[in-house]
Image 1 (tube, rainbow, N blue to C red):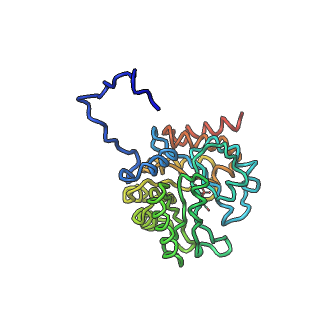
Image 2 (cartoon, helix red, strand yellow):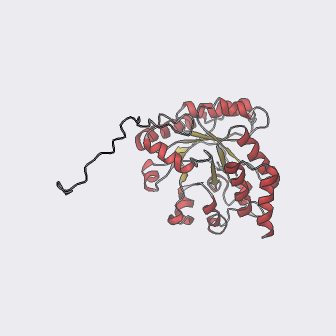
Image 3 (cartoon, rainbow, N blue to C red):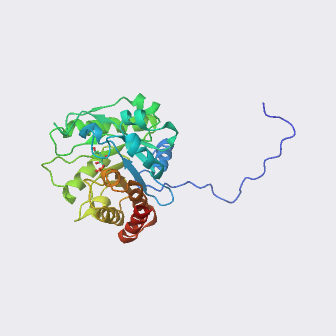
Length: 291
Ligand code: R5P
């Protein structure tokens, strides 16, 4: 028990200085619970306001994708450079060292493969997400697809878990083959995710009108990289997305399928956190290639 006598008298009451009511650096999350904000502040760097998420959840739908054949060899060395990792619980438990200390965006829905695509997905149990200390729950949402209602319901259930456990929901917009990734579609899909309770949304960049997609989404957007591009083009894509208001990337193939994945993730970091132009970032990439 603390000593009753001999304590130094309390006197620093800061009289005349208002207690800061605090604000939060990520839009649309000002009213979120402390646990949600705390986890978001691990995923997004509070200084730059942005994040570099390393996505390697592709195997759950695509099987042993190029670059992910041996995640212990290809992905684990990249983890120190990421702000957050995004993967399935299977990949996490089998290859990610618990000591890595990175926040986890847990792939939280399952049920599709490349053979059937955007399917009638189910959610993983919330207990496992809690056990794994997930910093975000990431269900897939297929707006405009056959399973639109089911996947939106999944997102809504995740938002219920967010309210109950303080783990943010990341809405992952999946675009079916028959749909066009234009501003109209992406604006609809991202807004639907936000309106149904997502704390942030992952979507694709589009050349025309991406700034409108970002503006009309009341929570932060991060972009997926998509299919492998030449490194210079992928850096340009990241640069344009950030310049249009995206708060980061959730990038996979353009990092782990690069000729020099460590160089690429460092170059992407320069764009996302330091505002590097594509040319400067490409030089960073090339410097790792030469080394
Ligand atoms: C795909 O199954 C996942 O949602 C990926 O996490 C997402 O597409 C990001 O990876 P990439 O940059 O390779 O598109």
